[in-house]
Length: 364
Image (cartoon, rainbow, N blue to C red; front, side, top):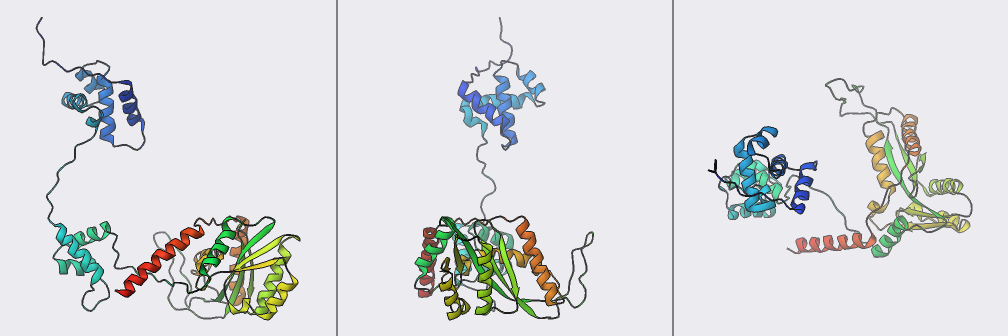
């Protein structure tokens, strides 16, 4: 009997291949054309005709035949597209290197840093190409950040001490992160703030009036995230001692109290020292010099500034105090602890690498 049409190679799918292809068809995140090819091959393995497979999946016989042929020739690798050549490169490696060197080692005439357009004019490229090169190599000439290396001779010991309290607090003890947010200004906007409307953001003027300042004393309970806060006119040693009394009253008797705080002179006066002698359950742990980033309550201060102060308008000290305490109360209603993730060894190693890099740049 004569054979009609061209003979087709046998399509045999092993159990392992079938499992892999079924998995690909059911994945939520997979290339759609890849999943479509997998379904075609699985349908062909049921020994149906190419016409029936094409009709079921609403495609052409040629597409079914191509998927079948690729699977027989390359098995599972036939599922993936071959890399395409694309348009030829117009920028050589030497030109890319020259852009990177110019960006890192030079500045444009009369300016402090390069922009994509000034570099494009210098390098003879489009500003879009310069942007792609900078993104590829992580170059951001428009961004600058400040830093300060701590000169504290006890840096290592203090970092280990404070981070140890955060990550492994002692038993039968409560850990507080304490600091003052000083000179918070009551600043009403000169004209009233225009509220947000449909299609229009909130608007305000840049100028404001001054109605005095106050200081915020805050102690963050590291374990619970709750904050004990008091507003005061100054941040003297006497005010600090008064706040310590508030902390003492908030913690039940018999529990040790560890306080993480900075090196402000008001924290080390004779009056504070005498108070600590009369209250031996208090233990102070000082952060390194220029090490406010190690004080966890600073994260709370950041949220307070962002959510209650920066966009606020307060015409008096009592109004400012009420706004601050209202935010503290709202925070304590749904308080959550901040989670410290970096170990002391990771912090010190990062500081060591940054110090070495700073020395190399300074030496060059």
